[in-house]
Length: 294
Image 1 (cartoon, rainbow, N blue to C red):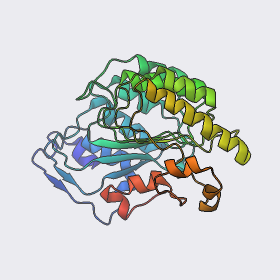
Image 2: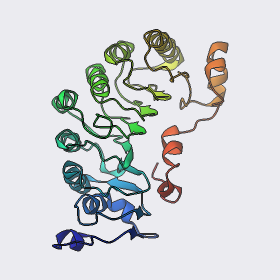
Image 3: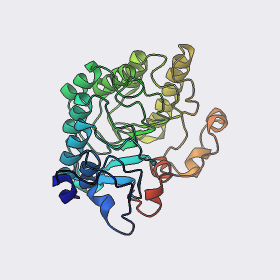
C-alpha cells in the first residue's frame, strides 16, 4: 500500500482490492491513507470495511480525511473505529482534519466510533463554527452511526456537540452513543435547547445512560424520568421526533428491567436483554461479521 502511494501514477485502473483473511482491518491508517491518496481513483470494491486505528494509524487517517481524495465509486460503507487497546487517544487532529476538509468526513464513512477518545473544547468550537461541506451541506452528512462513548464529555462539551450537530445537519444519523460520560440532567437539557428542529431528523436511538455520578437504582430511575420529560418537551418543539424509546438498550439485566414501572415497559420496544447495541449495529457492516472488536 505504501508503494502504491509513493508511485508517481499509482494504479489508476484498479477496481477491486481483496484483502480477505489478512489483518488489514487492524492497519486502518494504511488502508485509509491509500484510499485518500488519489492513487487508486477507480476502486469500486474493497472487502475490508471495518478500519481500526491506533495512535500511528490515526495520523494517517487524518491526512486522508483532510485531502478528501477517496474513490467516488466505492460501493460499501466504511466504519472508522479507534482501537480499544490504544487507550484514551487524543482525536483533535481528526476533528481538525474534518474541519479543514472541503467535504468533511468522506461520504463512504457511515460509522464513526470514537469510543475512549479525547476532544478539546477549542477543537469542538472550531468544528461548530466551520462552514458546511459534504453532499448535504454538513461535515457529517452521510454518517449513520456516531459513538462518543467514554469521551470525557461533560455538560459543556455536550452543549458544544448540540451546536455542532445543528451547524452540520446529519440527515442520515440514526444512532448516537453518549454513554459512560459525565452528563447530568442539566447537560441533556442544554443539549436539547441548542438543537435545531432539523438537526437530527432520522435519529432513532440515543444512548445517555451509565453516566459517571449516577449511583444506585433510584438515581438512575430519576435520570430516566427527567430525560423522558426533556424528550417530550423536545418533541413539542419539533425536535428528535423519531427518538421514541428512552429506556431501550440499557445495559441492565432483564430482571432489573422488570422492576421498572409500567410506562417504562410500554415504551421499551422489546428490549429485555443486555445487548450492546453499539456492537450489534456495527455488525450490520460486512467486515464485522468476522472481525468483531467489541
